[in-house]
Image (cartoon, rainbow, N blue to C red; front, side, top):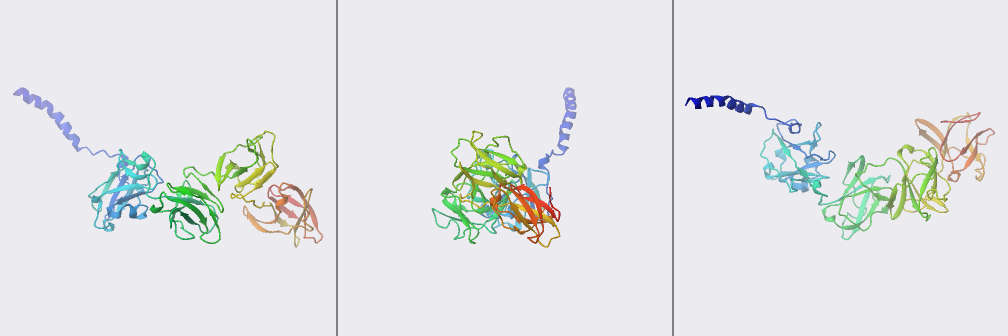
Length: 461
C-alpha cells in the first residue's frame, strides 16, 4: 500500500504540469488576427485567402441571402475589401436587415473572384460555408483554392475589353451574327463599365449570357456620330476578348503583359526581301548597320505587319529610317520621322509609303519652325530656297499660329511636307516691307526653334 501511495506522489507534479498547460493562451497566427474593427450593427467576416490570390482581383460573397450569383456578383455592395496590412485578409460587413427573403448565412454562402473564378476545395469541389452568427461579431473564414488553380475558369458570360485610343467622345459596339439581337439596335451597346488592368483602363462591354459561344461580327462606332469601322469578323465569343482600338483599326492584346510605353514602326513588307532591318540616324543611332531587327509580326485588319519597337528612350526623337534587307546590298531612301506616335508603312523596292492601318495612304505631315520674335518689326515672314525646292514666293510664309512648348509661347511657321528630308536656306523678313536677314541653312528632318532679332536668327537649344 505504501508503494502505491509513493508512486502516486511521484506522478502528482507531472499531472499538475499537464493540467497547467490548459491555462495558456491559444496561439493565434498573424493571418488569423482581426484586421477590421467590429461594428455593433453588422456581422464582420474576414476571409483568409489562399497563397497566390491576386491582390488586384475583385472578390464577392454570394448566397441565397443576397440573391445569389445573378444579383450579387460584380455588385459593389457585396464586394470584399482588402485589409490594409495584409494581402491574405479580405473583409466585409453584413447587415441582416439587407438579407433577402428571410435568408441568412445559415443557408450557405461562398466567394467568387472576377478573374480567378469560384471558390473551390483542395479537391476542386464547389464550396458552401454556413455560419450562425449575430451582429457585432467577428468570424474568420478560410478559403482553400480558386477555380483558376485547376485550369482555365469557365464563365457564364464573356466581355469585350477595349483600350479606347480612338479619340472619339463616345464609343459604341454593334454586333451581328448567327442570332438576332446580339446587341441593341444601331449604334449598339455602350460600355457597361471600366476596369484597370496593369495600368491600362479598359472600357468593358458585357455581352451577356445569351451570347456565350455565339459567332458574331463587330462594328465599333462613335455612337452614331458619323464614324465606324469593322473589327473582329466571324469569331466565336468563347472567351473574354481584349482589344486595342484606334480610330480605324483594332488589335487583340494580352492584358497580362505590361504595355510597352514607346512607339512602334509597323511595316507591310512588299519588297520580296528575305530579311528586313531598319537603320536609324539623327538624334539617335539605335544600332550599327544594318540596324535593329524586327520585334515580331502582328495582323491588323487583315494585314500582317512586321513591327519594330523603337524603345522608350527615343520617344520624341527625330530619326531618319533606312529600310534594308539586313545588310545584303538593298536599301530604300531615308524616311524622316519624329517619334511622337506609331508609324505604319508599306514598303516596296521603289520606296516607303505611310499608310493607315486599313491600308490607305496618308498625307505626310510637315515640320514647324518655332520662333521668339524680338525683331521689333510690324510683321514677320519666312522665305526659303534650295536645290530641288519649290519657290514659296516672296516674302514667303506668314506665321500659322502660336503654341506653348515647355512653358514658353512661340509663334511658328508650318513647312510643307514636300520639304521633309531636304535642306533649305532661310530668310526672315518683315513681310516684304524692305528688311530681311539671312537665317541658318537647315535640314528639314525635325522642328526648329529660333530667337529672331533685327540682326539675325539664333538657334534655341
